[in-house]
Image (cartoon, rainbow, N blue to C red; front, top):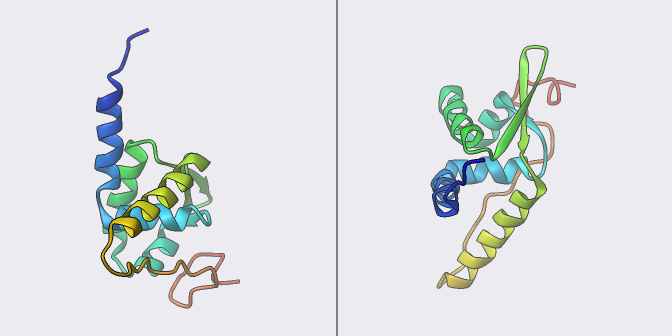
Length: 120
């Protein structure tokens, strides 16, 4: 078995986390499984952009996906990631001179989302 440099793996993790949209995607996925169209509706970004960010998160091992018909649903790769996100928020809140705003994650049905969950 080949040993892997732990700091290199940790740097890969932090590189994947070093983008505000990827952090928001992870925040959304910490609350609910979501398909690309649902994430696109919440984020207000184009589908190719969201898919690119999801690919980065998947390559880093932070999200998993499952296929259901033509849709692919994404979720966090582990509960420890939700704890890491919460801890990160606590750290930046403690370092901030003012109040930081983290946009709310809508849990209701989204009108502009074509996914089956929102079209019920």
